[in-house]
Length: 377
Image (cartoon, rainbow, N blue to C red; front, side):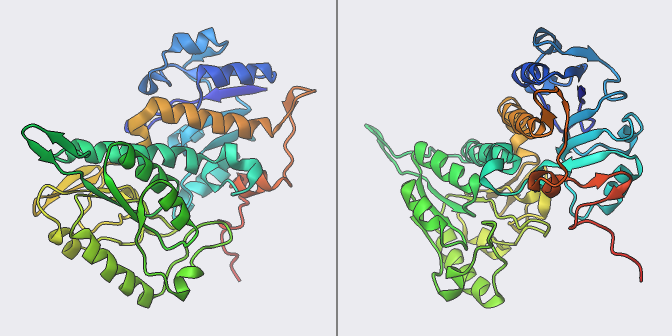
């Protein structure tokens, strides 16, 4: 059983899919591990540390690998370097990328999308969306503080008092909760909003105030999987009016709202941006999915009427060492479910709901029910 840790071909991706710690554990499971030369450089892990953990270092490590671990979906040019039947595990970004899925199917690999991991108790330790969003929420506040021209906590000095910054978090998933906690630790006065009623107590438990239109629709606004439902136009209008009034008074706004498989919902309009005072900061964590904020630009800090709109791409990658460590553990736990510990070989149960939920391609076909091509009548 050979496991390869591939290097990322995207120059904007500093993360790596393994750490020396996870390499040791793969070897203990009976695997030979090969790491692409320089794969860990962006995360501060030199080749020598992978070698000390028992991995070999090379250039074309994927050609005879049974399992290939990556951060991002392999580019078309990489697929020729994988053997047929290899398991390729990564954050695949499958929504709207049908051509890429077909290319992986045609290459004969078994592709697994880590972000499609079922939200079940057994899979919590494999949940890459949570592990990476947690760090993104933290980093959003740090980035906001760096762009904000004032202090976040209240400071009472002999020269006068510096008021605490008002921070508004929109979307209270994993990223939003971490943003609330971080902003509170830095001394901000924090408020938050979400369309899911269940998060109100979580927001309050972190010392923040919850802001929402709490009508009957609001009480039913969560899917069985724990995601936010898309709300009616009427509710969106009422919520937008409440938020518009609230945003005027805020110094920092952090938006985190995403709906799986759809463009990010627009939460902050240009009118709301214009209502904020110059020097205010908005961080849009959904900018790569179209953005929650009108005027946000992916990979840039846009300045609109004196308000900074921060649209950094790949925010977890801005904490590459930490995000790689968590992602590598997610992958290790997932791969462990595919290995017979006694025989020390691959033994995949294709009927396991974790496997069925994440498997995109197998034996030359796209097999995931959400992405199968519609049959031609």
